[in-house]
Image (cartoon, rainbow, N blue to C red; front, side):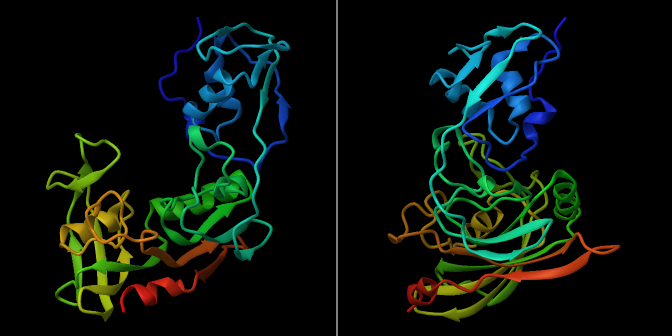
Length: 294
């Protein structure tokens, strides 16, 4: 009997550089759904993305197009997947060696591809994702060149051995000027892609410091002590100083050409001789941040 999968372990891995247009895989070891088998072989794509490729006629079984993701595939079948060509240059490189690449991600660029954006350049086109930045967040992001490095780096994020600093322009001036926001967060069940403060949620801590303040806006330094999804955005909204241009947590705020959140620095140990090398990578504050608070 074929093993049943709800969320296969391999589907959570993200690896590899951009494959060439058409890749012919090895034969699957057992009968299984078409989309599941392709997902196992192309784990850097989401299941939704794989299903979209299948429905678009980009996948074949034994040379024949199969357009239904739930088609059962027999043992010894040959699978083919035509991947869309990616157009676009690499983001600016802050640092690169044989193990890692550190990018200065532009605002508007995805960290990881989604089903509807397969042909759109994203950070995972250029390395193995270790952590993420929201599409509208710019700044420092590190990727690995191999799975061993990915694990080495990812453990540091999980064990809170990395140190990150962000800059944000807020609508409103936080008071006091320097404080720790210690407010647990949980998923918003009414809007599952968003989060909200919840006493029963997961621990979340953000240290902030006002660097410069105008009449209605401020440039704020943010240091997350935990790494919850949307943590900085939810915390700043919670103290009634939401981030300028945040389309989710500040939709009624002043119009802006981007979300004014920037990953300014990342301190992490990268693979090196013996026990690794501790390094800090930085990305300069975008010029539009200065203009936004005047």
